[in-house]
Image (tube, rainbow, N blue to C red; front, side):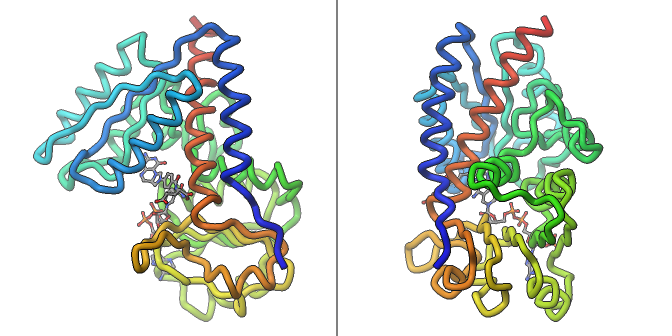
Length: 284
Ligand SMILES: NC(=O)C1=CN([C@@H]2O[C@H](COP(=O)(O)OP(=O)(O)OC[C@H]3O[C@@H](n4cnc5c(N)ncnc54)[C@H](OP(=O)(O)O)[C@@H]3O)[C@@H](O)[C@H]2O)C=CC1
Ligand SMILES: Nc1nc(=O)c2c([nH]1)NC[C@@H]1CN(c3ccc(C(=O)N[C@@H](CCC(=O)O)C(=O)O)cc3)C=[N+]21
């Protein structure tokens, strides 16, 4: 039976510690959130992020964009937020409406305010293994925090990341690579046999594709560490990409969904937002 990687409990502890740090700092961090209010997921997650921010003493400002918004209009919003000294962090919740080039918008965020780490500069620093003060995407960074908390060191391990989005898979592979794992990055065009072959001897498997029960217990090595980033709704219930019941019998550690990676994403975003405010104060 696997040990549960309890992201919910860990994120609570992180948020309690963070609330103290925010208070002690005397700073007033403010996170601006640009999002599409017509997108159900965005409304849900933005609401969760805002409530969590309020609890640790981070103010938020909502900027809902219209259906027919253009990339240029969003770039203008971001430029104004970059120039506003009261805003210490900017989050552009993906996806924005169809016509908007999300990547161009992420990359327009001033690197020191890019608390979601999705802009070209921050990603480049991560890729060069020198993120330093520049935030890294909250989901993969939260996964690393969780592994560290449970003393799981990727050094010398074989890691398989399934899914290669800007938000999750690419930065996840970079972080594991920076931590000296040997990383396979699988995606839609990875032949099934090739994927199954890499899973067979993987020490750490991190999956985020958005397909319920995509990975099953019979596909993984005994004692593997399994991290499930996927969020799917099946029969009204939130479930991940890993078939939990069969996988937990073989894994050494496994994240539940809900209660695993999701809460860590939110806690990490808040940590990144506070760190950005501190750095802006220091660099003034
Ligand atoms: N818990 C959390 O904090 C978060 C959860 N999520 C969840 O994680 C999942 C992925 O999100 P996100 O990365 O944003 O989604 P995207 O849709 O941007 O990316 C999905 C990725 O999965 C890959 N993929 C799709 N089908 C297959 C397949 N059959 N075999 C292998 N790879 C496949 C795609 O490959 P290709 O690139 O080739 O198209 C792509 O790289 C979703 O369920 C989302 O809700 C996302 C972010 C945060
Ligand atoms: N720029 C940007 N940054 C993001 O980080 C980002 C984004 N865009 N777009 C969408 C995805 C999705 N995402 C989640 C955050 C928290 C939970 C979360 O807290 N989930 C809870 C449960 C939620 C439920 O039950 O529905 C859990 O897993 O326990 C999930 C998903 C961040 N995303």
